[in-house]
Length: 252
Image 1 (cartoon, helix red, strand yellow):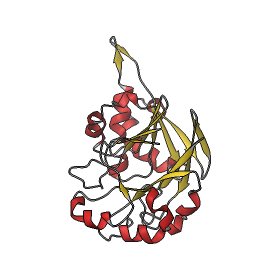
Image 2 (cartoon, one colour):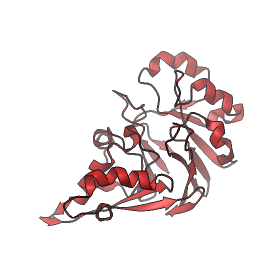
Image 3 (cartoon, one colour):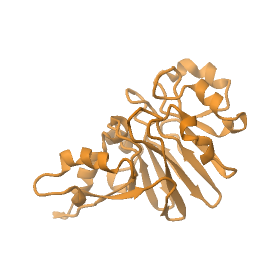
């Protein structure tokens, strides 16, 4: 499995693009979130909208969903030899987010006698329900209220024969979700939202280090961090956390 970090920055990043990824699962490309910087980050990583087979949306902040409508529209309004050749977008979403996401997309898509179903199809998963993508098992866990109070959100676990990764998504209160319960002896990486300044909606580096046992610190991959990360290099060097880098391809 290859993981392409299209971006690793927070909502207001100016240099690192939004925290969006492409997971290459054999011949299938799964896009993790679609922020407003997607139109630039995806091309810089040498992908196009039409390369994407599935999109997973974790929650509705603009840095995770702000580029989704454009992607859906560009895939739908494809023309080959002058003929309309639409590609419907397959969206994977936690059941708690389905209606809010549809409501958001309907504002831009449901016009000129089109319905949202003309443009995309939804794969709705409940907590722990497994969706098979080739040889991989993709499942979601609910993180509602653990990032922002009152906002539906989720993280995911991706498993294959040799191992699995856990991806927290945006999160502040890890213990509320019991992230540790998603981790097992086959977990090779934990992609963790991390902030180097204290705030109310993202886990600080100290909160992350305090939450996870030291035996797991070497499996932590920090993401969604501040643009001024260089200021915190000394702090980071005292930990075993690996910082995910924009365009720094990972393979597991």
